[in-house]
Image 1 (spheres, rainbow, N blue to C red):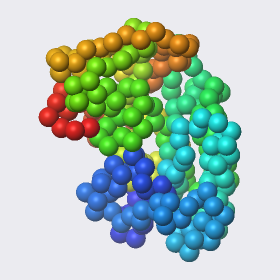
Image 2: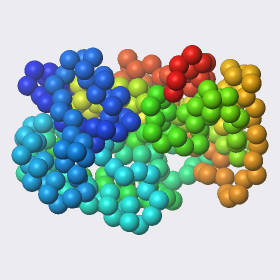
Image 3: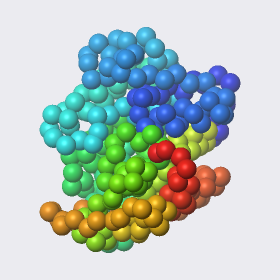
Image 4: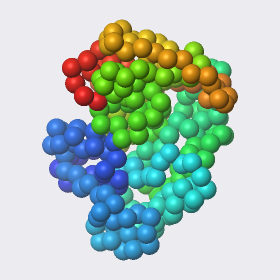
Length: 285
């Protein structure tokens, strides 16, 4: 089923987020009607957001649920995220959307020595993954077409998290600062550009895709290789190895199969992380 553009409004809950901003840029480009809702309009964590959202959301809207306090590091953050979801559900039960798209996380999946796909085991080993899996189960209460998008590590311009990985490494290099990697940087992970995540959201809307889809590149790359490419691009920067203080995350391997994206959303061209690093030489991240 393809969305009819004319009379459908796309409501973005959590419009101030990294992924939401990229999606909104794409919606503008595609000339689609959208309504961004951030914490200033309705603080989803508070009870009064139910009344506020109830006046804004209309039946048959397309709702993109991105709002979250992330990453979840403790029980208090977990409870706040579940309260956000509970408040939004109260509204959506009354104003049932035509299509609900929830941005979840690849953290819902168990670690695996083989490539993870949409049918892989979901037994999270982190509060962050646990939160997203619970939210997915909670949202099953809404009787409408639903898409659960599970992104892996997301990188790109204007990423606010500045976590260990490509964005932080490039920002350091742009300031002529050295890059620190843990151990030998041997962990192999999948990374996806934020604009690719936005495209997956867009095509989920347009094609009214119903089900789970992993927002992944389908390729793994080590942090050693990432830092090496950055050092090649910025010759004045050195890569410094730091002693690893804890166990290697995900046993050093987190790979995904992206067959579903290629099958369902054929127009999406996955951005190459190594090519992106070279392009950032003359632009701020």
